[in-house]
Structures are given as C-alpha cells and as structure tokens.
Length: 323
Image (tube, rainbow, N blue to C red; front, side):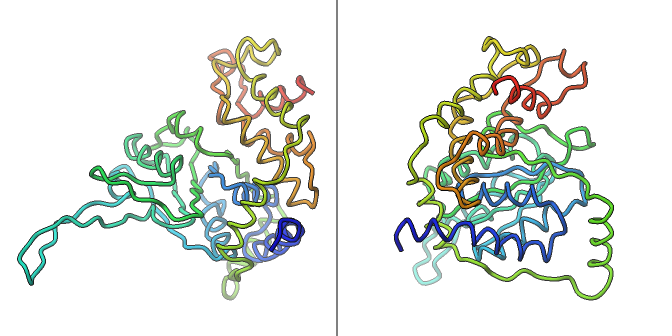
C-alpha cells in the first residue's frame, strides 16, 4: 500500500478506535486522543492520576483494539530490575551432563508494556526500563537482546504527594513523549460508569487493526514532509522554557526542556494533524500537544512552588507568551 492510501486510512482508523474504546471506557476523550497520538508516533506515554480512574483499563483496551502483544508489570517497592528485563538461569543438558546459562526473557519483551504505578518502586528498578525505552533493546550479562517492534511503554503514575511513591528521575521522564494527566469524570460520566459496571457483564473491545498496520502507520508519519514554520515554532517553544530565554514565565523555571522536546513537539503535531485528516500540521496542532510534551520536562524553582504554580500552568503561560 502506498503512502497516500495509508495516510487516508489514518483519520477513519482514529474514529473506529475512538468508537470501540468508548464502548469500554467512559469519557476521557482528550486522554484517548493523546494516547493514540503517542501510539502512532511510536512514543512512550506516562499517565498521571489518582487510583481508580481507569488508567489501566484504558491501556489494556488500546492493546486489544490494536491487536499487539500486551505485558503488564505491577511496580512495587520490592521489584528487582531482573523482574523487568529477565535473568539468566543455569540449565543442565541431561544427555551430555553439560551446564549452560540460558536467558529467560522478562515481561519487557512485548509490544505494549503497561508499567503500572511505576513510581511505587525505587529509582534503581525504574531505571531498568531506560535502555529498553531509548534503544529498544535489553543488555544482560554482556549480551544485547533486541525488542521486536512495535515496542511502547505506557506507564501509570500516582500523584507524588501520595504515600509510598518515589519521584521518577528526570532522565527517565524525558524518555516519555507525553505526560498525560487523567482527571476525575464529570457527573454524567460517573453515572454512566456506575451503570455499566454494576449491571450485567463488562463490555469488551474488539480488534480494529494489527501490529503490521500500526508499524506502517508509524513509518508513513515519519515520511511526511516537515513544515518549516512549524519546526521553527516547536524549537522556539522548547527554547522558551529555558532560563535566560527572556520570557516572563521563565522566572518560575529552574531548568527547561532539551532538544528531545522539540522533536516530540514536531512529530506529535504531525500525528495529531494526520489523525484529524490534515496532511500539513499547523501551530494549533503543536499547541494541542505542547502541554503533554513539556510539562514533565521542566523543573520549577522554589518560588513557583511557593506561589502554588505547577508545570502545566507555567507551560500554558508560556504558550500565551510565545504566541
């Protein structure tokens, strides 16, 4: 199938996915749209919200609709790095009596990995995902094992104010394309949740596309031409978060986003536009994804925290200042 035909399939596929996911998950349309944007952009996503907001259900449902292999790791304080990546075991060949080490793959060897409550385990174990997320490979005992594409990590995180949480290191947060806040449902949505989950059987999602078509979509989005004005805007937005850039809101920032933010702004805007049927992204498409790309890449200073500001508010202020 050529690129034009693949591109023309993107918007209808998004509508089909939204319809099927909506039969299982009530509301959260913005969260789902951002999740699909990360999925098609081949980017990892971090979902932040209090327990009970269907974050796990949402990721599981997306895996069912896309038809890729799914793995889940429940992060706990006693989880070890080898519980994620795998370990070597000593085996004996009964015919020869020889012993040899065999690598037993961990749950990271999948297409879509749900890292559930990722901030409930210490940083050493959190870091076990770093190589997998960046290089799509795992190194154990000097041997590198490739992860089959597509490989994506969708992680859930409880608010850091909750007891028993460990803040994610900045280096790991930067590996996530998006940081997506999952809010409480409104009254009508919550009533619908109660109706669906307390009467009869829970609805299930059916498959809309497969892993091969997902890879084709990811590849065609990377081949779309870059809009020079949009690329410049993405770079300007990322640079605006850095102290010394001259924008008023940087008074609240200790350090800002790096070049990876510019890259994710550009590919995120391109994917958002394509999923809505537009071949060429605009600045408005960049603004749709900017908060999710930037809010976990800036570190606020004490003055911001004392003033009750969070990263999302500062990013929204910067969007107004940059224009």
